Length: 211
Image: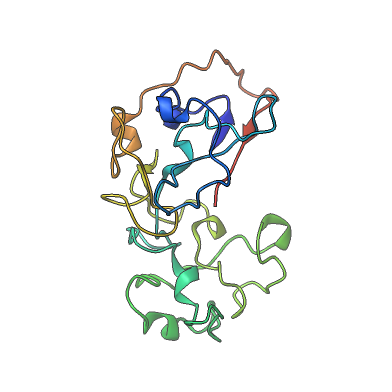
């Protein structure tokens, strides 16, 4: 989530539970009480909780070429794993029949869709894998073909899935501002940032990720 300027999905940042430091050790995402989006603290070396639950507005189970996310998985990446965590010997680009023989939530019937981001310089993880090879386990992930994966809401869903709760970061603590499963475009109001950008200008922003 964006840290500065403050995003509107940090709507709960002033709720008491997020008014101080993040508990240490940081509670694992998807664990009970794991609704923290740690960011750099002001001066005491502690992680700050000032971002509220901004990092939990997203969509679970999206895949390129699929209009509807499944809401339960982290997407096709998880479907190419065996029980011991190793990847199946499936060529994601060529052998789509094997992928389609798996449960429907692995890859939707439009899995003929091709990734447009193959250059290792544009990929942040598993960059050594040849594009579309059996080792390229993020091939069908949304960031591999921007704009081609359906989402629950353009502004995110609280907790990433209808009803919230579950694995892959699907957590959200209900507040007076939003509850798990709420759509950002419906419940999030504009956040006063005291920041004005001029079109075409160079600006300074900061961003953080929780996994």
